[in-house]
Length: 172
Image 1 (cartoon, helix red, strand yellow):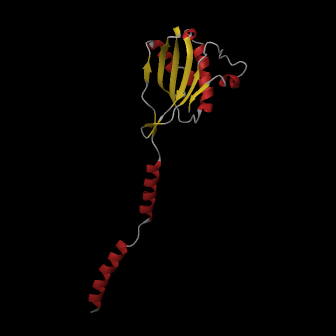
Image 2: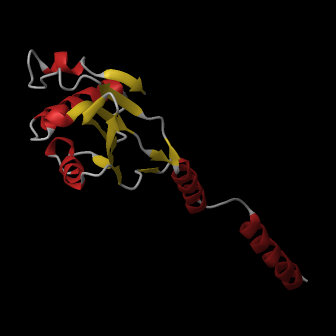
Image 3: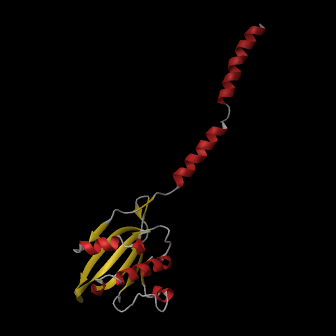
């Protein structure tokens, strides 16, 4: 009789042990999965360009002054008010630039580099933008404009801080 009771009690005890509670390993993997799923995916658009001057586009794309940022577009456009000149726009992808005030020094450095180019006299306006994708959706763009590029010297004088104020806020 004692043997029969032991044979019945043993499987019941094993069944209760198997069903009761989770292990520490299960809890840890559940937390890891939850944390990893919450992080958004940050990415940049593919590079694109608009304009007929491939040499200028490639020069802008590879300028050392913006080399630390991903260049996603370079655009050259005409305006009937400036028949012999064109506007130059560059879009960067750098999520570490959090707002237009942080974009200003990057834009100023870029403007100085453009001013040093042999074709700088043909540029009437300069635009610098910054945007990126979050989970495949475009984040709000930051954008600055120098609509009087020919009037600004972009030579560091009187100071970089003064030059940073030349930029007109467009978006961001």
